[in-house]
Amino acid sequence: MNVNIANNETTPPCKLADAAQPVGAPSSAKLDLIIEGGWVVDGSGDRRYRADVGVLDGRIVAIGELHQHTAVRRIDARNKLVAPGFIDVHGHDDLMFIQKPGLPWKTTQGVTTVVVGNCGVSASPAPLPHNTAASLALLGDIPLYADMERYLATLESLQPQINVAALVGHANLRLAIMRDPAAEPTQQELQAMQALLRQSLAVGAVGFSTGLAYEPGCYASQAELEALARVAKEFEALHTSHIRNEGNEVEQAVEEVLSVSRNSGCAMVISHHKCMMNANWGKSERTTANIDAARAQGTQVSMDIYPYSGSSTILIPERAHLIERIKITWSTPHPECNGMYLADIAVQWGCDKEEAARRLLPAGAIYFAMDEQEVQRIFQHPCCMVGSDGLPNDSNPHPRLWGTFTRILGRYVREDRLLSVEQAVRKITSLPASVYGLVKRGQIRPGYWADLVVFDPDTIIDRATWDEPTLPSEGIEMVAVNGQIVFPPPDPAQTPSTRPGQVLRRQPPA
Image (cartoon, rainbow, N blue to C red; front, top):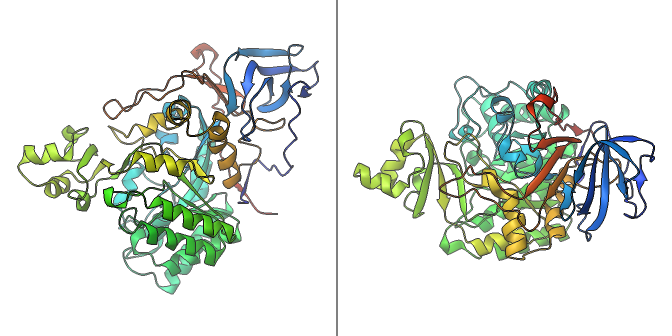
């Protein structure tokens, strides 16, 4: 996939030199940071090797034996792994950069870049005054931005803690243009949506997202989706999709978005691919086979997962009798129910579960309806990346918010041995950098941005649980964003005046 995002970077990546032959800065240069003695897992999927990594002005400038170099700071990484910063391809942190800019749920698990604007909802464009949608609650409750340029400019002015790339939500396009967002758009409205998408892509959005399981995205026809995907194709941008159905009709829903991609030529990502409810467990064998067939025919399609058997989104009353275990993560009218199970609330209130769910609205929930073995099987697919899908606005969030990436490396890699460390690191670094076109990120190479993580492969683990979902992970030793250490938090007396993250705007194709 060939989206290009960088700070006006167009040069090809440097070739990684042999670890025994330091490359980059001359030995006389004083570096900002040297990470020494660690095992480098460079993000390519190749075997680890022992080397020092030198950083200057936010970039990796030297790899090899660097004992002759001087540095402002040296980090001892002996017996540790040194990897590129992890890339969260599916976040809902759009407004958290403004509300809670420290983003500790990201930095404590090694995330240095996040893609926001997923599931069809984004921080811009803002809806028409009379329009709203329940899915907007995924973002929080502060006002949205009139257009993508204002949103990205605001992030740049606030200086983000980590790097951020933004999608524009399809629900936002409908809500911003259509007088009745539940209707079929007129030709004029569709053209206005295309124009608004084109405007968002022109200022740097990396693509557009759809949430076809939610209103108003669920009202969109395939023809509407293809019309928007053709605009994204003009910019060599992406379409990511929370597909229309992840239960009984999951195969048809996957085929729908594959058809959109085939017919438009637009590269796409299937978001948090899963098969919900017991009767549908195992269907991923067929959906991934169809994805493989589409890829073999030239369709550019990838997918992502989070490593849990419970999903989380807004509370949908119609699911109350379909899924046995539903945990409430937040409720506006009944905050006393946060963290309780829907079945217990229904008993307490003397009503059925659907009625209890309606009384709780607006609300969020965790749905326990996935098969862990199937999640692991999808994760092992060659084109599968990792996205937390974390909801930082939830008062009692899904543990994936704080633990996704450390769970991958601790449980899926060390304990379950699903993949090697090198293969897993590739899935959370260079693969998403390639898919989303994050130029000079996702690998440890000279000239690349110094997004780096040092972790202990023997102790790295998630600690967030269903009952204590905000416990920080263990085993992450250091996280640097563009060469500046963000975890552990620096001494307040030495805290830099600026946060080191960058807004990653999509580059126009050559």
